[in-house]
Image (cartoon, rainbow, N blue to C red; front, top):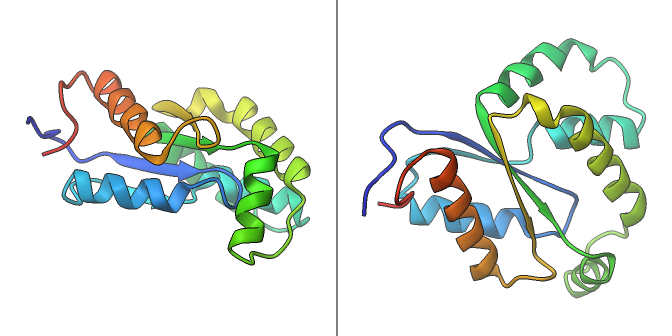
Length: 150
């Protein structure tokens, strides 16, 4: 398989319990850690600043814009029922799923044009492996490569 020549910045983002970390680990392993793969990035930063009313974070806006322009976003989402089940299964703190999803979706809609590219996967309708394959296919299409993994 062909390897991507230039390492990429790939940001996995979305609300809690959608599967970001699992998919990030899968991509790291499949690409032999060839890329800078981030679990939570500018989308989380902006969204959680709004959700938790954090002040004084405006100085990071230019940095966030620069990151987006050079990074591919993998936006991971899931249904409310799926997230609720995962929260319960993992004894995760309760979250306001509707509020968080609405905030993330609004920030994505407002900043989507900034990203080098966006891949969206829904882990409530696809298995981990199906979601992972969509990510690989999306990366290959964006980067004009036949294969993303080594």
